[in-house]
Each structure stands twice: as C-alpha cells, then as structure tokens.
Length: 223
View 1: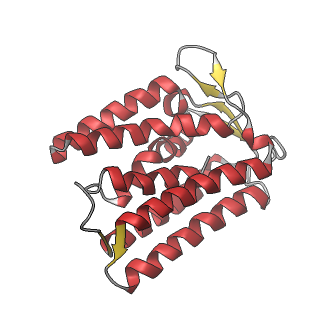
View 2: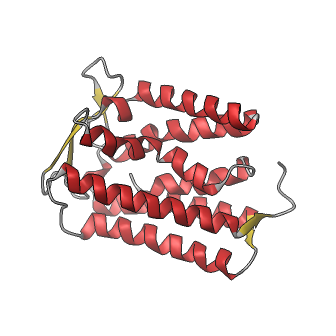
C-alpha cells in the first residue's frame, strides 16, 4: 500500500491535533522509510519481477526487520516512547505508536503472502489485493480521500500556501500512485531504488511540513 498510509496520517490529525502532519506522515511511513536503508546494507532483499502482481513488480524476498508484525509492534512502541520523552504528551505518543503499527495491517490488505509475523518464523500473511488493480485503487483512494476529508474538516488554510500547497501534495501523491500502478517497472537495482525512494520521501515529507505550517486547527477541535 502507498497512498492509503497517508490517508491515515491525515485522519490522525483529528485525534492528535498537536502532532505535525510531517510527523504523522513519517509515523505511518516509518518502516518504508527504513526499508531502503536495509536494502542498501544488504540486510533485507527485494527483486524486481515485471508482472509479479498486477499493481507492482516487487517480489519482497526478505524484509522481517521492517515489515514483520512483531517488529511493527516494537517500532511502534519505540516511536511512542521517544515522542513521549520529547513532548510529554501521552495521547499524541500513543497515536504515533499506532500509526507506526498500522503500516503492517494496511499492507496486509494488498500484499501477497510475504508479510512475516516475526523475524524468527517462516509464517507469512497477505490478502493479495495487488492482484486486482481496480480493487486496489478503490480501497487506497477511499482510505486516502476519507482521511483527507477528515484533515480538511479539522484544519483551515492560513493563507494561499496552505490551500494550494495541500493541493500540490495531493496531486503528487495521486500521480505517484498512478505511475507506480500503470507505469513501467523500475530497474532491478537496489542503488537506484534507494536514491529514488529517499528523494521521493524527502519531497513528500517536506511538502507535508510546509502545508501544515500554513494551516491551523479549527477552534472547535478538542485537544
């Protein structure tokens, strides 16, 4: 899953209005941000196999440290703990931890049976929605635009940057989703994947931070 994760980030702003959007984006995408670094250091493995699923060409050979359920729980607890140490806000810390953990459950919907339960067993899960393009896009866009609706219902633009910046972020995320789905498969190169993914995530997180700085929480939101 890609764009659906960001939908949850948008929606989480209602529950944790003190948390910046860039932090919520980083939380739901934490294991995917960590993943290319695991690849470049040869700790985890992926292969590009054109046609592997209808939606993308990635055969996730080995990624238990970023994408197992057990590690999702551990990463979530660690993220929540660090956030609480920094901000002393238990509610927001819990939301951050749950956002990190949510990644595994959202991925479960779309992945083939390649998501490990723990790094120490061979049991894997996945509902395989990536084998159905229309169903994948419907589910992902429903989650994304549902979360976006929540975000826009609890925030308002301070200026034109807050309005048009959000539209720019939306267009970018939708464009990447459609490109990943209908475009050519990426080169089978860990180095190229690493560079392209780091640049993309840096751009998305930058835009999320910029948008959120130019928007404000509506006064009716209970913090």
